[in-house]
Length: 76
Image (cartoon, rainbow, N blue to C red; front, side):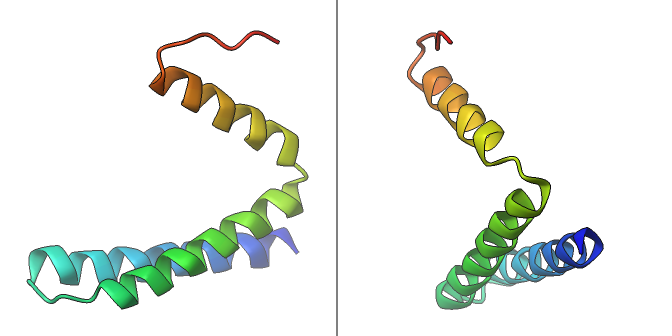
């Protein structure tokens, strides 16, 4: 199960990287394709989080990142 989830995530990230490279290095405007690939990566990440049962940890990590952006400290 986890091998399939990780494999799909790597595939989707590669497709996103390819579309971003086309847009920025070949000057081929393809925002819609990039948006679709972002959505695919996002979905694959959500599947990985579920497969690893790390929803709580990811939520906490997001809070830490937000706090760092706002230059404030998160207390437990």
